[in-house]
Image 1 (cartoon, rainbow, N blue to C red):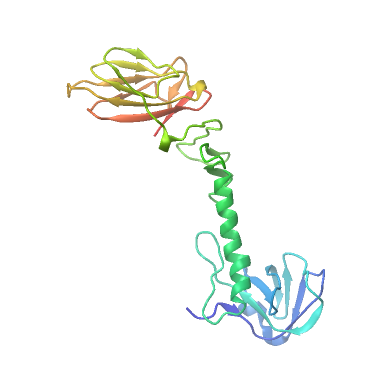
Image 2 (cartoon, rainbow, N blue to C red; image 1 turned 120 degrees about the horizontal axis):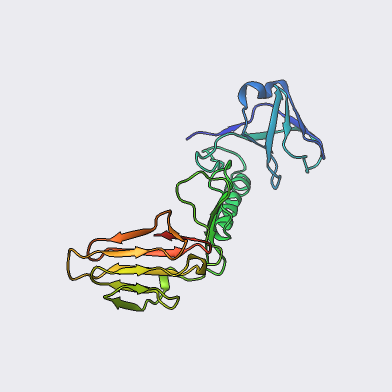
Length: 255
């Protein structure tokens, strides 16, 4: 990959102004489209997003220039980005590799990771959707406010570490009402297992331990709850399992 920078001509910048003036040879109107990043070719300078390309010799930055007023400066405008998250791509022969990579690739990656870990990761810039794991390492938070999807989860107070949970299997051979002290039910025979209320935000794993291959386990909702909009589900085959979590209102979600 060759250079991704445009560097023709010289420019003038003014402290506190968003306007950058270039010489005619800059040819910005023909060479630059947004998004693009502008930087004066000096060590330690900040980078700026270009808001508008006004002419061959005038661009308007998205923020006020914070460096010193100066003229006759060489510059660089980077214009290559990754497809998915829009991180800046640096090419062979590009100037100020360290500053550009730090400010426009490493820092945005660090911010994205921070949002994921604190439960505020944006899936799409146009959708208010967030997901992640809280800083305690144990709380799952998945939520959406404007996402059109067939399945949306929001468990604000689920504080169990699924990966490290110690299960206490209980074998049931007759109909059984789950209690909040249960975390794993192994059922055998044609039996019905009734869930605890979804409002309890209780997690339960249920497995078909039938010795009779024709037996079926019926998992039934509690009261006015639903199991993802259904009243029940069946575990028809030996070793079928399901993990269910109440959402704190009236729905059990399955994993």
